[in-house]
Each structure stands twice: as C-alpha cells, then as structure tokens.
Length: 333
Image 1 (tube, rainbow, N blue to C red):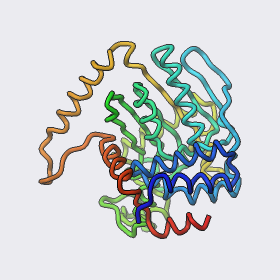
Image 2: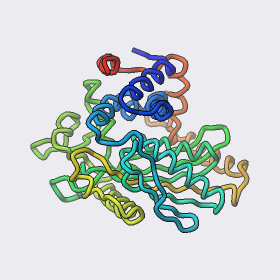
Image 3: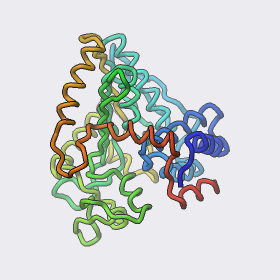
Image 4: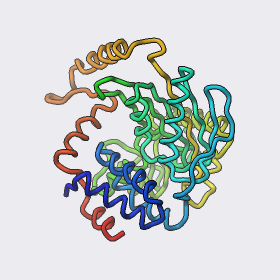
C-alpha cells in the first residue's frame, strides 16, 4: 500500500506524543521517520518506527533529554547526549558543526552518550543542503566479527559524506562498514526476500543470503572483508577518543543498543571557492561517472544520493510504499 507523506507524518507525531515526547519534540522526531521514508530509506523510517516505540516504552532512552556542551577548543567541541533521542541530538550536533565551519572554515562536534542516529545520510544531506561538505560517523553495538575471528567484536559503524550542489542534487554517500546495514537486512526479511549477495554467516559458519539466518547469528559480513573490518576499528577508535565515551565494546554490554557516540565534521568550501566553482567541479565529476557504459542495457550508473532524489519525488506524488503488516502494527500503536 502507499500512504501520503502528510498522513504518515501526522500518525508518527500522534503516536510519539502519546508515548512520552513533548509536542514540539514529537513533531521533530516524526519528521525524522517520515523524511527517511520519503527518501526511500524505509529501513530507518517506517520499518524502524515500531522498534523505537518499543524501546521508548521500555525507557531505553529519554525523549526529554538533550545534548550539553562539556568542552570546546576553537573549531572543535564535545557534547554529552544524555541518552536522549539519537536523531534529534545528531541534528543539533551537525547544526553546531556547520556554525563552527561558518566561523572557522571547518567545525567538528564529538557527541558522546547519545543513541542510535537512525539514518546517517540525513546528516550528510543536512550539511550539503546548507552548502557545506559534511562528514560524520557513528559506532554501534558489536554485530560483525573482526576479520579472521568468529565472534562479534566490531560494529557496522556507518560513515557518511555529503557534498553540496546548489540545485539540491547533492552527492551523499551513506555506508555501513557491513556489506548490508542491519536495517537493510531487516527490510529484506520483512519483504520475504533474499539478499542478492551473501551478507553474513549462518549457524554453520557459512556465508548466507537469508536475512533470518544472519540475524540469528548477528555475524554480519564486513564490506571489503578485511578492509571493512579495519575501517570499523579505526572509526570506533576516533569516536571513542574524541568523545571520551562509549566504544563498541562498551555499547555491547548494555541491554539495548544505547549510548552510541558520533562525530560530525562540516567544511565550508566557500572559504576557497564560490558556489558556482564548487557546482562546476561536482557536475564535471558526476557527468563523467554518468557517461559510464552500463553493464545492463537500459540501466544507468548512479552517483551516491541520486536514487534518493528521484524516490523522494515519486513518493511525494504517489505516496510512500509501506508493507501492509507494518502499517497495521503502527495503527495499533
């Protein structure tokens, strides 16, 4: 089925308010879920909403908490998220990084003791739409084995880069260190489908394309095998040092995936280039990529973030596609 964006937004807001969010915070939080769904990132939008409400009811996070500055030095600042709602704290942190970049040319905010930020790409888009280059990354609970190991020790620790373009067709890379994000595996299971490539290990220590088997072991496959494993470890180290807060090792000891930490970096390209110069550079590279000869006839090679732009337009016009059982559960909330 397809649900209009406004109807979905209003339903999210009403449920969040009934479950403990203040009115304005409920609206801002509802925007997170609705806009992620609008852009086609259902795994971190409508499909994640039910789980977040369950965690809210179990008091896994505090909907009234917000971030507090604990340290600063020039263009770099450290904040404590106080176990608040991850996406709202993350949005504020990127806003602050952008303010610092406007002043210094570059800004960095280390956000500790926060929670899951849901869709990391949202903060890349946030920076890019304001004319900034945005770079951000987060740690997670341990859900992958380090390369060469059997038991889970490292997180899929998403990494995001946003590059601005004046017409809004920004380039935004959003990737987990696992070949597939947890949300993508969950979405594939909900659709009763299989992954096109093996995404993790089953109980027999075999690579599997079946989402349920991977979720049962929690052993997701690092992207690029040893390269993804190494990148995950490096990002967790940077995050833990800059926030002086929870590492993947620490988060994995909690009852829920809480206390996650993030780093947000914004760079102002207008300190060197005009917006027109930046656009010309981006267009030149993107157009060259788009001129690639596709492997399959009738298809084109896409740049990061291109899909979201067109899915957003289609979903605004025709409504957001939602799995029937998911929508029925949301209505019961």
